[in-house]
Image (cartoon, rainbow, N blue to C red; front, side, top):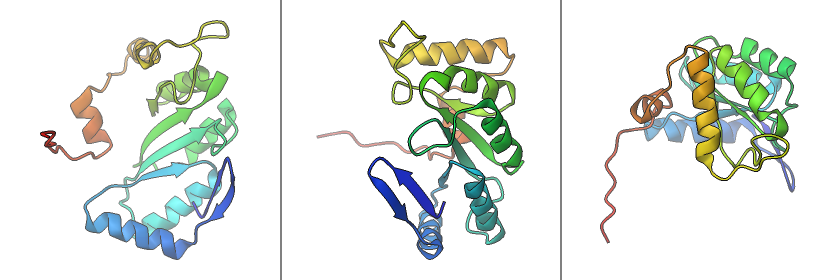
Length: 171
């Protein structure tokens, strides 16, 4: 959106710069992942779609609970999911103690989720996470019990429009 709030203050980003950046991404055939932290950001997504700066089926990450995110409540998540463009691919990223409840709600409402130790260091109030795999396993169980399919690596890459590139890792 036009403004992003972080740990160290506020930085304004004007629409002209955003538009130029998106044009550059398009020239490089890169689909942007648009960070949504409020309804105001969804208004900006709508403007970008109408201006044809992003495709009608954008990739959105709804960020809840972090310093750069919105309030981490079920009501806020449902409001953002409801207001997101129906054609969008929506990822939900929730932080802190509300990560599991909001991740659960997002899965049951048909959104995709992101999980990891960068957002949550506890499995529950008493149990610290030892590895990302514990959080991924918990989301996998949630997906299974909601009778949705778990995206494998190739499906996940396609979902977020990552190109299938071979990397040269020779030294």
